[in-house]
Length: 126
Image 1 (cartoon, rainbow, N blue to C red):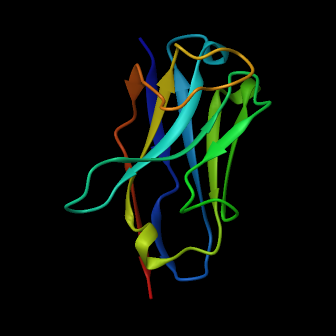
Image 2: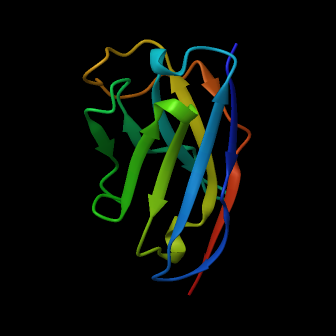
């Protein structure tokens, strides 16, 4: 069992930045590819970013490419999502996810998460 706890959400102005964190516990962090998803009101949950077990490769949705950066700190069992140049359309609940099915150095999307966090709200005002 893996527990994922997100933090760092909140209110930002358009053009601003936020950094989300996801702390993992309960199992070996390095055994999981990690990802971020988001769900806006009235919309389906969508993929945002992913990072391999080794942190050697990252993947992004086209809508966030060049603005968001995913990273992981193995020593802290934490994955981050640095969000820059925020837009109102980035407003959503952001979820952290862990996927044990992917190989160490590459990911064939989509992620198929075994575990999800509870989500953290991000609101971007215009």
